[in-house]
Image 1 (tube, helix red, strand yellow):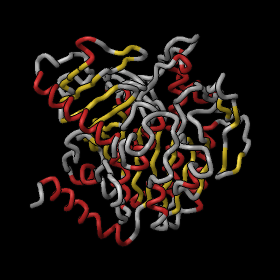
Image 2 (image 1 turned 120 degrees about the horizontal axis):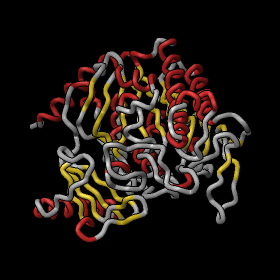
Image 3 (image 1 turned 90 degrees about the vertical axis):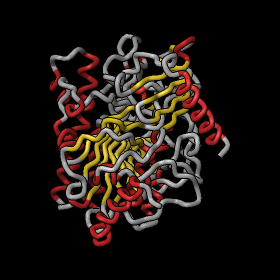
Length: 444
């Protein structure tokens, strides 16, 4: 017999089916880079100005318990595009390319005759076999590496092992647009793709490299935040440039009459960073805020991967919702593929679940638990409880009692109090669950 959760999910899918059958929906995925959970107006940041992203949130559902599946760039993106935990997808950390055997949202939709494009940061391979055009994207404009200078479009951070190099491409051809701000170039290309493909179903993936270092923004954005201290001012300016861009793209969607038939998702790859190269004077960065969560990028405490997330689909998702159900980046592939009327791959394990019923029909989270493994850390969240093993805060590894850290996230979202001695049986249960899951991933 079907469970109540399965019944709700099936009912939501059936309710959406008539429209999906008539006109296949479009999909736009916005992704920011090293963006703090707190750092949008709709997330409570009074010193930020993000009216366009705030409007997107008001038009649909804002998730308050949405997670990336890694606290760093490449594995988070691999999980989002494949619907699989990073280890299972072959990208456990920054560095390895996405294996050529992996299917992506783009490759699955392309097989359904969708037009597909990526404008922005890839970070999952730079060879002809591992670049975006080989992974389902008809059109690619952007860069392959983890970050580039916003104006010269060069990668400078590999010294002394890697000499700096230029990294800007249109499909497989290197191009040069020196002096032009990368956020605005990404938006220009996204709008051009949208204009050219407005009469056919499309999947547009727009992964901005802001507000990842280097901390660059044109003066017109910086001047909006004259009262802020320098690091926060530049960070806010970079986010404002993204916000303007989201507004431009969504204005075009509405102008073309596509809003009612377009599912739009917005999130970030991981939390704000404390890396000194994002700060000033070689000091840890202070620009971004993951408040109220503990930790930053690279940490398996919630500050590392508890993300802002918005899902909008006018007419399908009721506006003005704030949803507390636990969901994750791995859920995006099955959600989009199912909405497109396509089949989720049956020849591999897909860890994500379709969460459109959560946004559109009030269903509960489809996850009994979520798991993370990164840099020697291990974490599991089940319901209100989260266990972190060998967690890190900046460059500090927690030891002693806190090497196993149990938090009640409903009472203590900042993971400030270790409850391991209050619930030893629960610690054993969650640790066993996480270790077994980790073993299954390693030997899949």
